[in-house]
Image 1: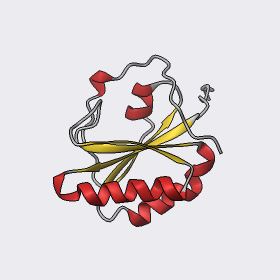
Image 2: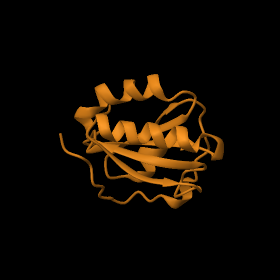
Image 3: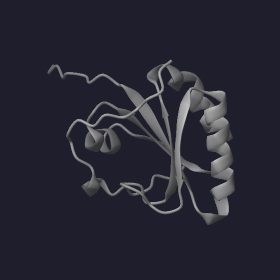
Image 4: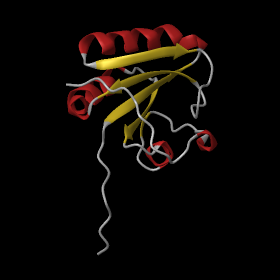
Length: 125
């Protein structure tokens, strides 16, 4: 068996996808998430940003928050698509190979991501 170095997960991003008809639903979900958990809420983008094909809002959180927060999202997303990925320092691999979806899988524009180390601000527990 070949041993592979497992990168350290520094945090996670949950990207809540929405459109004009679900904008207020998504905004309310993200605001509630940020008020109930140690989650940093990003801007509510009413256009595709980065690799994301839809309008979105990013929720950043520490690994210790995952176990309580992700099930909460699953039960409250009410049909919204949520894209989750770890943050290990390699955006391309994190988005392409290590991601999780709640709802329909959407096509990401991976050409805008690099494999170089990227630093993100993640709330600490």
